[in-house]
Amino acid sequence: MPSQKYDLAYLKAVVAQLERYLHSKELYFPTGEKPPPGEPPFPRITPGGLLLTVARLNAWQLKPGIASECSSSVDQMEDLIKNWRVAWEGKVVRDFSARLNLWRNFLEDHRKNPAANFDRYAYEVRSRVILHLLSKEGAQIPPEKLDIIPDLDRILKTVFVSGSFIWEQELSQGFPQDTYWYLYGSITEV
Image (cartoon, rainbow, N blue to C red; front, side, top):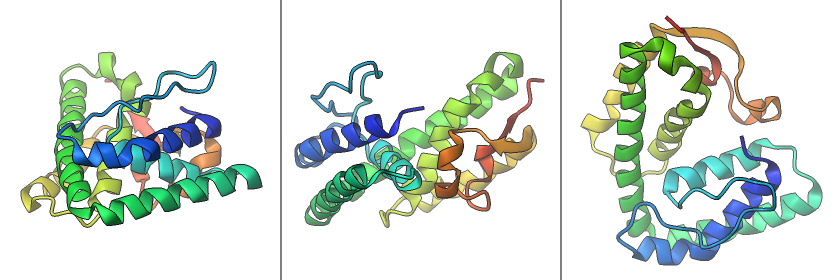
C-alpha cells in the first residue's frame, strides 16, 4: 500500500487538477504529475480514489509539517467540491457504479475459482472501502445500486474469515472494525 509521502503527493496532484477534472467528461483523469522517487505511478483521478487517499491520510499519525500540508490540501479540495458540487456528485454516482461492478466481478471471480483469486483480496477490497466512502458523499446514487451492497456483503460473509487488519497496522484506527469489518480478515482459498 502507498506511503504517507505518496498519499500526500497524490492528494496535492489531484487538488491541482480537480477543477479541470470536474469540468471534464472523463471519470478517470490523469494527474499530470510524477510520484515521489521509488513509488509506483499515480492512479488516475476518481472521486473514490481521492476519498480513499484522504481517509488514509486521516488515519496516519502524520508529522506536524506533513499534517499541515495535508490539512491545507484537504481544505482546497473541499472548497473545490463545494464550488462544483453538482459536477462532483455526478462523478461520485459514476464512480460508485464502476466500483460496484469491480467489486461484484471480483466476488464472482472468487466464487468461480477461489484458489486463483483469494490472494487478490487485500487489493480488491479497496473497491468495497471506496463504495462505503462514496455512499457517504450525499450524491443521488440510485437506490437499486445501493441495495446491491448488502447482497454482496452477504456473499462475502460466506467466504470471509475474521482476522487481523489487512492493511498497514498504522491505518487501523482510521478504519474501525465495526464499519470496515471486511478489512479485518480475508477470504477462503477454497
